[in-house]
Image (cartoon, rainbow, N blue to C red):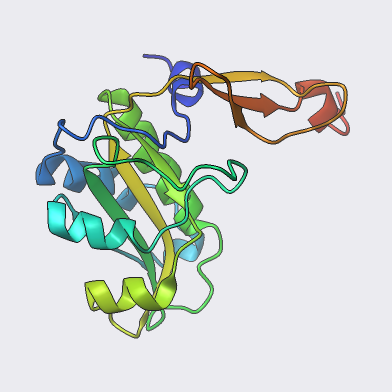
Length: 193
């Protein structure tokens, strides 16, 4: 598969087939992609907590907020919840500035997931204190992102931003998730050639 296809296929999926389990080795291989990715000053300060355990997943799920633009939706229902999580943390004993490392790592993880037929969602809206307590997170580790992973069951469609400029994603009456994207011409400010 071409990289451009993987990027377009890799969406923020929020509904999954909860009967499809993710193996621990799959999560390890996805984190290995992140490990091999670029790191500012090559400090490699990121640490990870992995879960495929149903009880732990439920505790993690309770600490997350899903899809802020969908005001009438509180997140995946039973049967549609992710079957795996990767918690990305920054080790403050290495540095206190994680720059963009966690974004690079998360994108590598999600592209790898997409390549093997899985999907996920980066979540930064986290009830930090509860997550720290339920996972017994080291005080030296700053929680940066949680990635929910599973077999997607929703369709996500990219479309051009409408003339009103509204960039909010939405779901239609069939449950299709629509994600407006600004045009290439709008985001390129200058091209010197």
